[in-house]
Image (tube, rainbow, N blue to C red):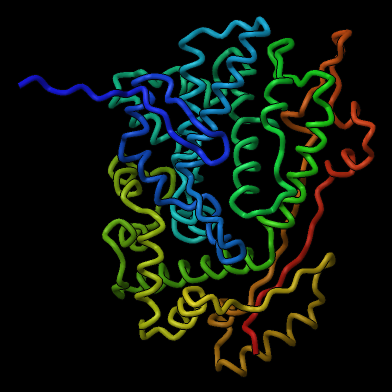
Length: 409
């Protein structure tokens, strides 16, 4: 009986772009790999669905969408006479497809509490290198471009810059799933206006208004969505839960958790001891491991983790205040004193219930990987110089805000 061959040139239906084609069998096999399929179980926006109920899209959606935009960008640049070989095109498709593969469950909260010694970009690279071994070196060029080592800089800029395919997808996608229309950028036009000059990615002069809209959309999405105060307090609460769980586990107490999640609770992981085996264990962990554990921890005899877990699962979140100026020490002391008395806590326990810090929003940073505008006469200017929109220069300055979270009375 002859073995039936799988058709690897599949088409996916995306709610934002319509039909997305998988360009070749290698990329099909990478998408099919368990390491990549795990991204279906990793939320793109963490706990933002507690604010925007529609925000349940995953990192899988985002990675596929970014690859689709990269295909468009390569076609546009080739049409404009930029030489991109088939190998180079394939390598940037792979690099953008796998750029977020190292994200763990609730990525930023996990990085602040459980896997503290390794950044998700370093884990992405470890995944790519493991896949490269499995696929007989076919990802080597993609890895070189991803690391910024390849001699053609603009290919790296398509993956990682201030106007890359990653940002063009996540702004449009997050805007769509949250329903926050302010983030709905015109990615189609932005890509159509791309070009390459002196090995750098540039935007043609007539695309400047689309770039302005993109920068403003980024600012609004940060304040309205990514730094929304309820989303912020939920993420900080999750950090505290994970930190407490790790603390209890390191004291020798067993916490209910999946095998993979238990491994990271019991061990201090950093870049030096993140082995191939650690990577395999990391690849078995997703949002479901964390949420199912937190549900179990509600009945834990440790009153701190029990209260915090119940608070998150039932969305009984702490109160959060955000101000433009730092909180006075006397104000912080008053809140701490009240919470300490109400909940009968010692100073160490208090840190799990009252926490504060700062957040910042910088829609555009003119000091690195800046967005270059190409004029018809060949001149190139930074977008802040090229724009007659006064706000664009203002948006390149970081804006800081200060938050404090504490239990509601």
